[in-house]
Length: 584
Image (tube, rainbow, N blue to C red; front, side):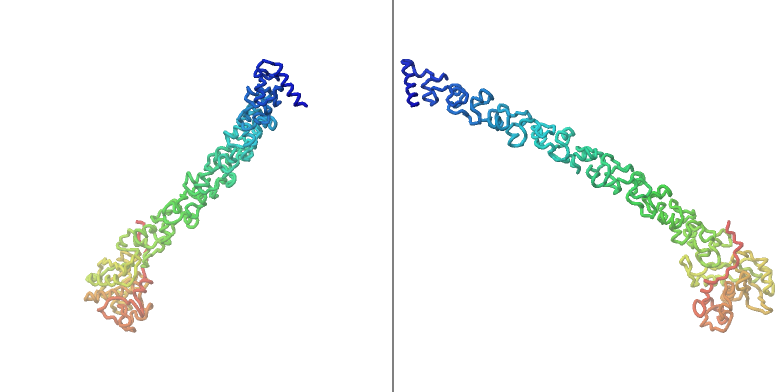
């Protein structure tokens, strides 16, 4: 029935207009002709065919579809887009922010005409789809930074107030100059918040105090103060203490030697981590403060003794190569077993240095060569000691003679040669005995000479009495105990005084003189029964001390059954030396 009515109405209209052109007549008042509406399938009797709030002719002008209430399919009727929201009814996303206009209105309440509703620098679509931020709030996470700044400038998370989870919100990090996307901006091993809130260090500088250690090392490894370059106040920065010197940056005197670490490094060149840098047995502090020795040199004075040995064992001066000033370095003295604190260790009157360096004598032995003369006496300026050598065995004889009885020089030379060839080892490396014979005064002739007369003559004429000399007297005829004898001599007394005849030829005289000289140096019958005896054959005991020797031989025995030379070497009799001038 309704269709019939419509058809009738259309017919009536067409009749009514009669001759008028149907192409320009608008039945519904939308400015579209009936023909147009009929051909475009819009409702000629309804100005807004799709009921979207826009008349059909407005839709045509706007380019929208009058047959569809939401031409662009964005979820908003065309009329709302045009009349209320100002969006483009023919564009799904009017502001090009990646969100359909309807979605912006209905779901997010964002402005579909503005791509960045909250003005934070991010399109609304990006906030929703990519960053999960609130497109209505410029700072979604409330960290003090706009979402756009976080994404575009700082690479931080705009949805998380503390992007790097370091304890500082991103906005504060930006104020501090730290990286809100990196928990440890300066890569020093400490999170930025720990630096700011716990340690007061600079989170943008790995080594806040510039001491050579990064802040994290100072806090976690060494427990030093990252705000103080020299934590222990010893004058060395913490870094060099750890990396260069091996010292403790928390202890001013790492090795507890009494010297601050910087004093060791800068002033003395010692090792602040070693109590005794030079290994001499003395702590560095003691060397510097108490002893004034060099803590980097084990033997400061280069005397051959370590400083500790000098100080603690020998009580010598470790800064003086020759503590006792005797001319011999302290170390040489110890090698020689001499006392480096005593200039003349053996008290022989000769400084140790002169003994070792000048004479080759033993500074610990008063009589180095064992000849009965002290080293001091032998090196004295006394003329009587001319030719004496403290390192070689010496025998001195003063010979006086009666008129016409002068001893033969040839005979004396023979005996001197025998002594020189003696199998006696000397400290200077030589062998033999130096026999010094001083043929001195010619005295009045007397037909006989007994013991008492010898003594009287010796008392009157001996010039070297008390100077270690033996006395000898060549006479006309020796008498002993009322008998005419070839000669006699004192043994171990009376200067070993000898009385001899000048026999001919010189060999006989040498034989006779060597026999009496043997007594003078200590050989006697009480020493060995073959001396002054014919009881032992010469073949067995080959010595001029044996009565079986005859006159044509020289020499003392050098082996069994009795060694004359060894006995002399070990037991020589030397007369008094009290008168030798050792002060000249």
